[in-house]
Image 1 (cartoon, rainbow, N blue to C red):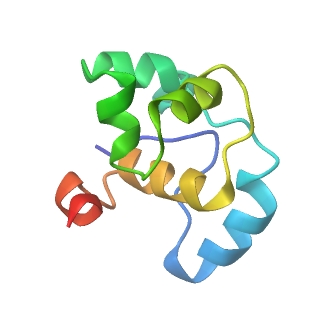
Image 2: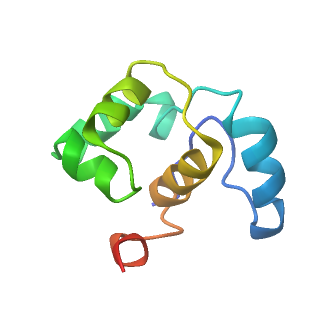
Length: 93
């Protein structure tokens, strides 16, 4: 389940640098260059359900899926989630 979002999953020690430099400047892509929308659809989840695990509203998630820049903390969480480094249990506790 080691999937990629344009870049390799950041090491914990690289998380701050990753969030500051890459996440703010790179559009997020899902596994195998799949977009966030396609990744969410492949999980068979609504925007509200998918984005709520990251503390994001459905309307913001919709904008992220259509190209609006994703804030670095959210981008980091999404990348870690897609790469299997964090799970729903980790995010929803």
